[in-house]
Amino acid sequence: MCGIIGYIGQRNVVSLVVDGLRRLEYRGYDSAGIAYLSEGKLERKRSVGKLVSLEAILPPVPPDGSVGIGHTRWATHGKPSEDNAHPHQAGSLVMVHNGIIENYLSLKKELEKEACVFLSDTDSEVIVHLINAFYEQGNTLESSVQHAVGKLHGSYAFCILSEDAPDRLIAVRSGCPLVVGVGEGEFFVASDIPAFLSHTREVIYLEDEEIVYFSKEGLEISDFKGARLIKERHQISWDPVMAEKGGYRHFMQKEIHEQPRAIIDTIRGHVAQEAGDVILAGSEHVGDIMENCERILLIGCGTSWHAALVGKFLIEEIAGIPVEVDIASEFRYRDPLLRKGDWVIGVSQSGETADTLGAIKGAQSKDIPTLAICNVVGSSISRETEAVFYTHAGPEISVASTKAFTTQLTAMVLLAIYLGRERACLSEEEGQHLLHQLILLPKQIEEVLKHEDRVAEISKRFFRYRDFLYLGRGILYPVALEGALKLKEISYIHAEGYPAGEMKHGPIALIDENMPVVVLALKDKVYEKIVSNVMEVKARGGIVIAFAEEGDTELAPLVDEIFYIPKVIPTLSPILMTIPLQLLAYHISVSRGSDVDQPRNLAKSVTVE
Ligand code: AGP
Image (cartoon, rainbow, N blue to C red; front, side, top):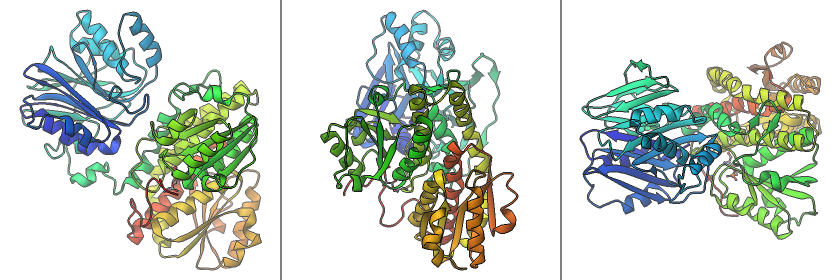
């Protein structure tokens, strides 16, 4: 996830673009850059770090110029550095990009044969070289862009301008958000509306495979085949704060809704569907490092530890490799017995959690190879480990982790399939089936999200309770832990996750009409046992809120509330089952009037012990 903006009009472009980038910084903030035409000359400034670092190198008096583009980066390919920062340049062209170009390596090879010199490690740079290659063959900028998009695979939104065409700006959308702002004699184009909301409320939403050609006089929109399109204009009524959250009330809610997209981005480029296999392209050295692996130790904290617990089920079942899971702060001080053939995988959204980093360093001091499953490119953990498998959740602003968790689970599934195929534990057909189901998952998540109102209704009934028990079995036990953690983090309600089979060994003493029990029930091999748990709770006057799968008619008459998720294979059930639990915690927190995005006493990255 990155933020891009373009402007063409009469006003000073530098201040408008910088102001727009400030409002897009939530999409990425590891580097920023701007390019603009001033007196017909192209100027480009880039800087590592937040936008303030870019502002520090801009001229104190905004230079003249009324056409320009800007970018705020969330690294995916290539660490945060000035060379990797956008805009990228080729000849007289400069471009900013959001998204992932899946076939960048093959395009780069072709272009290098034609003497193109690449100056960054990014996938994005191929776009500008590719367009420039067509441009230098004598095509117009417009047709060069049209030729180039035919060769790009992946998801992208980009914005390009040329020093030779000072009154033109072109923007393209295919798989990543892009919206046009229409002002008085001026146009904006950006990843998100807040970038220009203080200047205009009139917008045109672009769809995939659309290109906008701007001049100072007007704009034209066409599809990739060149057919001209007439698009409706809309008036935005959101206030600026609402707009930053995409119209959602809180970042957490927005991030919950971003999960289908985040999962698609995490899967992207890794699936070899026909071979029933996983490709580790872009996940530096994971393949080399996993050779000769006899045992995996998964470590993490909080939500990332819960992802590790699910990972154990996945890797053991799919790849047949024994897995142990540890809380990072325990692992680092208990002097674990490690041996040759062990591999340590640190799971971390931020890549900055002190305990996870310390545990990784501890393993390295015993010559154990380490791998990270991490969301932040260039973070301390991703730099420390020998190999990294990146999730592509994009920046997670809300302290309570949501999309980071489900993308970590997605990464675990991919890794397990990769290992299973490598070790011949998983047949081609089994691999194909799993990948097929994984590809369907984002749509199933969308289905669950459509029923958010139903979860909100359940929340209204229960938000005043002070204690909750979450029960799950097998692969859903860590999901019960995660559901309980979400609730306690943002609602300050005491909530415990428990393996359902353990209820009779203690927690059953707590059951009464004051403690709702959240039960996660799938029609799997332990379904009957979960039903018995429900009966035991009801027999003691308890309240049951069940999360079950569509078609389950048995549970409804036994419980107080029920929410259905679409039918899903057990391997992927933790991802789908997590979504309504996130929504439950979210709506309970909202009903209690808690600070959803910044709960008391918590920090997004825990960089101290
Ligand atoms: C989850 O909602 C948390 N706020 C917290 O438990 C978090 O998962 C933990 O601190 C680990 O963070 P990391 O993934 O960035 O390492």
